[in-house]
Image 1: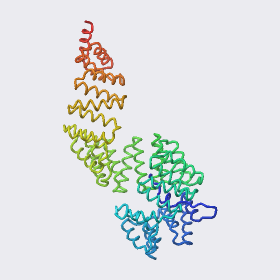
Image 2: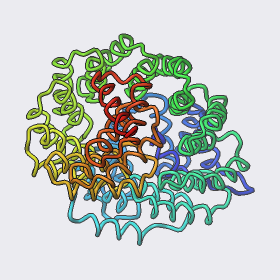
Image 3: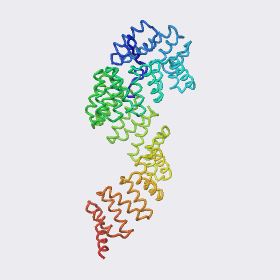
Length: 537
């Protein structure tokens, strides 16, 4: 989510009203980037209402913003130990604990309320606890109808990737409090995450009118425009966020993405250097800096950044992927393989290290090793169409036609709109001497992609091998219409006209074009002379 805080956008929903609302004021200060002021306001509120859960949640977020998160668990453990059976104390402490420990703390609450039920659901989800449906149902049933509580519940579903459900709850929160900026931003974010960025613009426009100084509004607007592939609008919004809070790391990183999308990597590098200086522990900033340097072809500098990142966090698999990729580009395949192996060991659930490991073996001509790496990837990600395609090509190179065809067909089934995969399947049928199937594949591709030279030439090649010479010549002629400067196409169809169809005038025309285009085969000149003699008879 490019670092967007679920706590900030889901938990801290603004309760607007004509009368003074200290909690709303504290939340507003936090959303405007004033973490110190927000912390002071939350502390004052807690002094008056010691167990106000939303004041404590806001306080926890403010402490995180100020880099004081490490002491939070110990602090809230003391609060909890004051009365472990009290629901609010248990819920606040449990949020700061690993899932198993959180469940133990929450289990001591004498009268579970909405926050306790929701806390149990949050803790159970990563543990795949079979009691999760029961806990979630209890949380939904106990959820009060106010905007803040609905936002908490919406955040749970958003964090779980259930953006439809989260969006519905954020919409209810916005209905409960029409002036809730956080609810509108949450609704917009869910629309973006559902792949509907255009539909996110309306709630963001409303939020902008309600509070022009809320940093989350221009930040989310920038992300929406990035998804709409409009880097200019994204930069305008993200620069607006930075004008409100110069230290907004998420906006700074997203603005670098916008510069990269615009094709201005130099500006992206400048922003990422600022980000790394401000927050050297932010791995995403370091990694994006490395990538921006790569785009500028400053590979040595990128390698230095990736190596420093790996040193700072030896468990960062993405840093090893970056190192391996630079080494691969430098032709240092053996060293690249070592990095990709380390990355795959660190993150066995991530497909990229396995794919690049296999790809590097392909570049080295180590087909069996590549197949082994692709197989490891597919065991974890069976829907990875490119891996099926590549393993099929490797098996074809090893002469394992049946296995190759099965893999290439799987790639096409997974991604039927991919022209490359279709061409590879047709070529594999051709290599297996299955011309009927090859012709059918290439024929379908010419109908689907009539502007593809490769589809028409593949069709011509398979039809020629199947001795369907008239159809083969027609297919090659279509390919030549699309690529008239391709000398080899003229040569191939010329041979078909000369040897198979005895259409010497057409053969002569294509042989002449082949030579005019700089065709290097010296024998073609003699073929042209033979055709010329036969045309004169």
